[in-house]
Picture 1: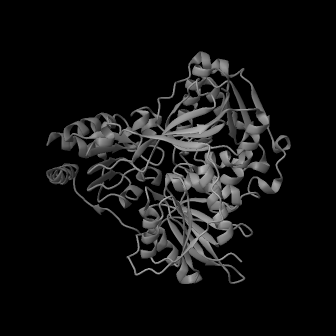
Picture 2: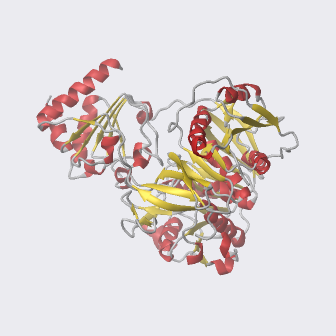
Picture 3: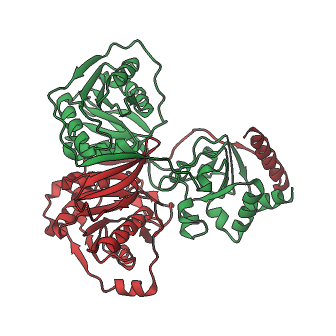
Length: 264
Length: 326
């Protein structure tokens, strides 16, 4: 089974700010990492690959240095990678971004399964996976806990999804998109050897020239929504501040905890 | 001209989800300015109880597609039904609960209607354009420390569609409802490529952090020097499980699956002691329903103090070392 995995780079820390003029994200540092939930998606892809054979291709959209994230994903076992990088597609909202990712997947080849992290550590909209599925006209199961593929039913995939306080076993006809929850498995680690091997694995770069999407459908121009303002929250509630020496604070903390423990 | 505020009536097992009821309150606040009609859209197999509940919330119209099967998790089919309904109703805005179903279903609807979908709003305000028409300012927390952004749906894209975080608005008081119920029988329910095979038995939660009534949460401050040793000793002393923010996970101080927050776990301990946590909303989102929440941080402006019940501007190490002597 050939699998596409969608990943995104997120800032290493949450210490990012918003440019007051453009409202664009200012990354605290140039350092990015693969979004944690996407690592869980890669792990699911690797397990399925071990079971079924086929190849795993990792996709990301971003600046040229997003290659780093793709190499890292290939060091984790992904076979090939695809970077979509073009000023024209940058800065899009979820709709404009999903359109580009879906087009890149279509152009790259035939995939039975598309996996991605359910939520990103920065934007956390949880929307792109479903939107990619819609663009591709295939089913999507969101926020899943585990994936199961049965060779005796090769045109289907099963997933466990928790919602409404229940756990559901859900089946989708392939091809399908699955969005994988953060923490649902333990992602493997890269080794020195796999990191070295990843340097020579294929990386295909697409600009919008290859994808051929109309400019009014992608990037900032193709986004139905736009950020018009950013502000610091004002007012709101505030904790009751307790003052004192460390000794006094420790004693007060103990009182609070003991009192509440009495109510447990 | 598109008109009206439409609320998605999310339902499960024939009952309206409370997060949808809350949105009627959000819609009323918009209505105060725009004077638009508030309606609800329902797609369900068993609609009767849902319709009664919606009537009691005081909406003007209830649009219903009664399906011959439960569309639970069948986003491909349900999104088509919803898109067809919205095309006919032609509202100016659609409010959706920011729940797993809300975001996955309406992501597809938004793509079908090419109308955009703003995620996870915490406040909806009304703005006025130069021509006197209204638009909705969709406020939501943004990345990083405590910054909010205002998002709008650009001119030419309709309806304005947004998911709203559950718990921001309250369920309106019950009224004597006389909503008009409109069955949209001409809308077809397509086949789905998704099926719910079965409901699985509940898992025993073996993860101590999810079941623990007392949790100690460490942040960046807990990573300084060997503070974490003190934090661990403190957690042991009070019988707490340890969770952390992303820096703790990034440095592998705590396991990957003990990250608390938007992309990690949501915990509901009775007692939460937060140590050296700045309080980014991505993290504080993951702590709910506490009875006692104490935060210790050296920065008196730390956002965590807006979430905690009690705050101590102090060095966590000094306080905890003294605590361990008690």
